[in-house]
Amino acid sequence: MLLDQINNKTLFNQTEIGIADYLIKNIDNIESLTIHKLASETYTSNTTIIRFCHKLNISGFKELKIRLIKELENLYKFQNNMNFNLPFNESDSLKEMSFKLAEIGKEIIELSYLELDFSSLNDALMKIEKAKRIFMFAKGDSYINALHFYNNMKRINKYIILSDYLHASSSNVLNITVEDIAIFLTYSGNNYDYTKYALYLRKKGIPIILITSSTDSILAKIASTTLFVPNRESVDSKIAPFSSQLSTSYILNIIYSYIFKNNYKMNYENNKMKDKIAQEMLLKKGNLK
Image 1 (spheres, one colour):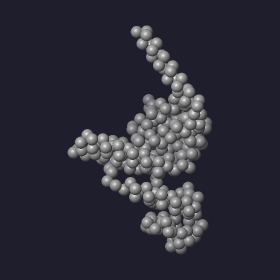
Image 2: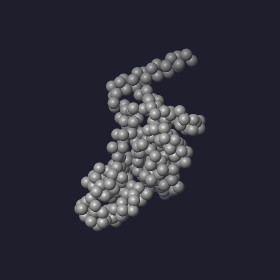
Image 3: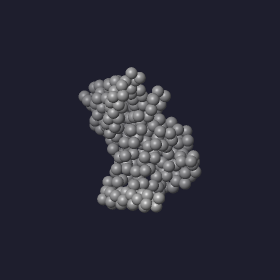
Image 4: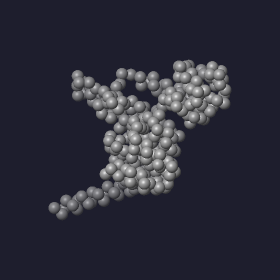
């Protein structure tokens, strides 16, 4: 989220920290704030504020205001009693528990959409389409998302290399070329091995896409393109990765759907043909018994 980036003081110099602090303290009045007033209140200039915006990958003050207003609306909309770490309690009936899980699912998908940075998403899609091979790094719960993505991409003859399979991640890193792309899935963004791999890949000029919730991780700074999912889950206190798996799966489904769409008719016909062949093979196998 943009608010998280503004709160991240490591991005800015001392003058820019003053601008960030003023924005956070006066966030409720952002709609009426002008660039001239912000410059006056922070003893800076319009040019300094524009540079501040550029550090956030934003074109200027007008876009900064629009993005912040949108984020505030989203935050107010979703400020309720929903607990993404403990979505139900021991006294809930089966019906109540089922309803709460459905609500969490709906909310996290809507949040994921509202927080999408379409500029970064487009950049990631262009890189993925151009890549000769796609190397995917994912562990634990993220690996399940990677497997689902791998299975979908096979349907359209795009083969993913699951780099952590059989603990072969380090050797896979060495095999990646500039014609390929690396995708890292890590909700927390804190993975020592992945940080080492990403640094090595960046030196080789290999595009890196990161899908994470962490705006201030080292990986987010190394990656060529970062796609952020909503940070609504605690690594320590969650009972299951309900929201993080859904939000990551949503992003991966968008990537798959976009690539499918670009050759829609051919991919649709190929899928039908594969299903038909698979059914025929199963029938033959059954007849052999």
